[in-house]
Length: 466
Image (tube, rainbow, N blue to C red; front, side):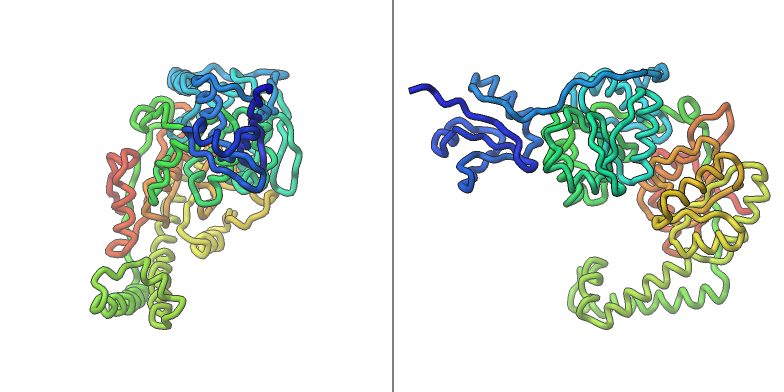
């Protein structure tokens, strides 16, 4: 009786091994963890384990019929990539030695050029995954300019799959169960987004053996950045910001400007603080470890908790929209007449305040694609001297002309701090870049600012009172 050779296929984001019985499989399938699927009488496993499965079978000399990979080699019509700098060459070489893993480089040091060089050398069907539509289209333009390839687009109501395609994390999660065996190389831009509960499916359901992650800030507050080693690969190259400062990136200074609440704002702030404090004190009489997470959970059933949460949010709004911040902004505009200025707000409300006060374009998450592009083009061609944004510009947008940024609100995370600083660090001659951080003294903003400064990006922060 002839020996039955097991068949390895791709099925809805998983691998199926057919032709190996449940009993035989338990003896043969040691690692990674296969599961017997009685519905189809086959062994099933996440598609991302494809490379390890093939390696395991070959090392153990187990015959199998591989029908997973449908990706094909890709030739580039017109390669016009710039000569890589030494650190970029080192990043490419480090990844190619793996060849899967994460490249960590500061914003503005040329991670896109690294990825394009890897794509050029790999010459295989590639899918680039970006966090937002704007970056998806930015990748499309860069691939066309650097490799002469008109990439397919998967997302933004377009489903045009080509051997080289660009997509977003959300679209990749939706379509990867069908596309997971069509690309040999996956590139995850801003890959710190990947480990989320749903977005990780973009990696889990793909059989691509080659994987590249790009980020300036891999760490996540929930610790899930550790999962990148499984989803993509370990960090293969890391360039500290201090190494790029004044060389690859513009030299810069970070100037912290304290402001104060008005008497009316201070009175409201103090009142709201007392409301929040009183609720927490009362809860800790019965639960000494009562914390922010408990408050959020209790809002669904406890009116007092909802009242405390509303007070907390109102308190943050007071410090976020302090009137003196607008006066400081006016001074900074006068100080930097003729310079392109980016203002990072902490909320949509404050962004609109700035927009109305100074008649500036306001870029928010809900802005349409055309509106966003018109605003960014207007900033590049100096139609607008400045723009104000909330989160939209935190990642990935190339603004080489901007050398002045003003942070008037935001989170405590060092990740956001580095991303915002990166918006002004693309080198242009010997021009010094300046990041102003306008902070409400003696409020929660002061604590958040202190946490942001616990990073090499903020070394040498100077205090200045305008």
